[in-house]
Length: 458
Image (cartoon, rainbow, N blue to C red; front, side):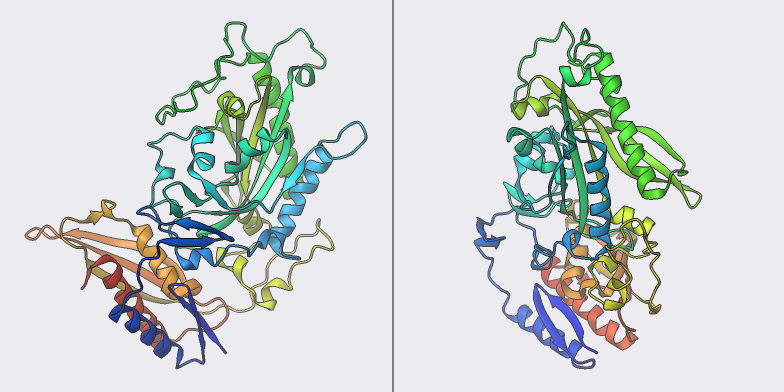
């Protein structure tokens, strides 16, 4: 059986027994003559200048174009089609045609303005940090949510649409987190005539609201204490009617996916781009599980898109989260498997019949710890981000790693240097790993950590 690993974006295949020697040789060569920093980066056919913000890795770039949400018979594609079909049926025009249009092939490289500024995400919001996003450079990144396309699509004249695609976030490594996952995002806008079709005397906006365009350069700091009853510009009647329609439709979607008897609840929450905002949770396996987030769109966002006489709602949902529950898939890495034993279990021939995943076999775990001293004056989350280490591990070991936990951090009382210990759980999705093989890969991770972070292995 072939073993496939990636070292800084290079794909290496070899027979068991020679794989680790090939990897070791590659890492040793890189250590003796490290590759120069590339002044430019080509992504999706476009060239970008790199800078101090560039942190996207070759491993992450290798996922671009995979389009698992469009792959025939893939569980993510099945969930996508279920959502699209539901909205096609829920909203139709007078001729019986679907109101919603679908965009599932948009370029995942977006600007900081698209991903953050257009959505009123404050400059101090944690989601903007380099430790949370994959930046191509200071002005471009791989989208962290499909919501990033809202303003451009609304500016183009769309008022009912779904966006589906992969998103990229730097995160921990475990069975439910992966640096690339998929979202569906929807927007519905209505005018006064449509919302108050039966009550033409009611208004969308308060009489006291001036209608003045918000300053596009002014984004308020993070605040979870915004009035969650309504925005100052909207009338209470408009908000309540829009809320009722939104919740009715999204509960319908949830029942379409999970069955008519599913127990659910609405939870008030905060999002920078909606006000008021809610999360929809379902009762699943004796626990409340968040399914989606939604809310009334901030009117400033619509103003930025050139829309002044409408209001609307938006919602977003993670496809992997739904698929893991509906298909009983235990590990998020399986969505990236090309193993026929996994893929053959799913079919688009009957979208209403969702089979439960049957494990082909259970391969054992191998667990190794890695401890090292950080350089002087470098602290955890202040000069060293665990997400940087997680990306390094992905680049070296790929999907051989099932989980990483930061199990210990220690400050030496005399030297003041910080030590960290990561517990790395190895498990291949398609075969059994030997402890000797894991030990060799573990050594490569240690070597790469020394080269990348200037740490001292304990």
